[in-house]
Length: 54
Length: 329
Image (cartoon, rainbow over all chains, first blue to last red; front, side, top):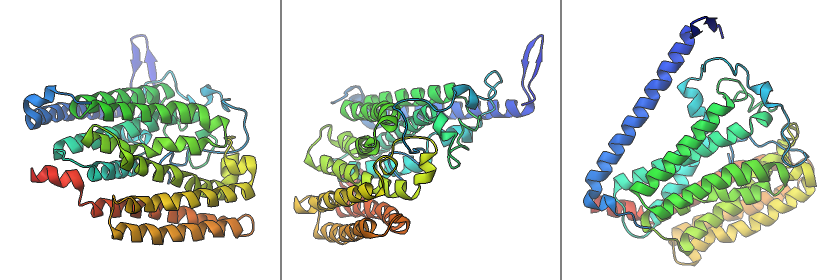
């Protein structure tokens, strides 16, 4: 790692910035998928979505 | 490939529970910003193990009586897959010290330094929580509870306790790999019965002969890291006898779904023929002159095909059960 530190804090390398960006996108897509999943399941189950059988 | 682990397990006598390598040795760059790529996190999920888990869960889900909406079935499988992946991440977090000693596991994200142990732990815990909660909210409580227990069993009972303390580690720990079809069944029915227990038992008794065959011909590799696998502790001869005995229990269990009327003659025939081949290979393992590597390799390879065939035929045989009914509805 070519991490550079300055008095203003940690400065990310380009590789670290790219990795962080790809991780952020993956997290965003995962959360979006979760929202869509809950939305679709609500449509599928209707009011029964509130019923949680054993 | 085992449902328990993807080969992270390593063997050899070792005092129970001791860590072999100081965590600092594989926590390179702990003060640096993370450089972990998305692919590193995917690797933490052990995708190959996850695919087997999904397949066996799918069979449990498909053969269960009753119907389930395809979206609900997809959700159940997704949660089971994520839960299995989370278990893998927790396993890699805890086993990073012994993974670092093995040539075939030292390139994994944690021992290679691409993902920090803390990141792997947080990733595993977060995914575990999401998988269990979503399954409980969108499918049913019983399947969520079984998934939570499976993750706990694999990460805590097997990885943290049994694996480093007893040569019976993969026998008892094999239960973790045997639960997915029960979870799939519970997702459809909200209950359990004899049939999912049979599916559980087949994988449970399949695991020792499958895994010990690998452990014999990889003994030197396993011995490097010091987990008490049976061949390292009790020797090859005893292990080969155990392989034969477990196979003799496994084969009737494999045929049992047909004997009990849960499956057709087709399944019974496939289970009988492939079961006979399993016994034959296990006898060869038992009788072949030491080190019996060739026979063990044959048994290991065929055992994967055996389990896959049993479950695949069951899947087809039962006409996809609730899945098709759900689509028709």
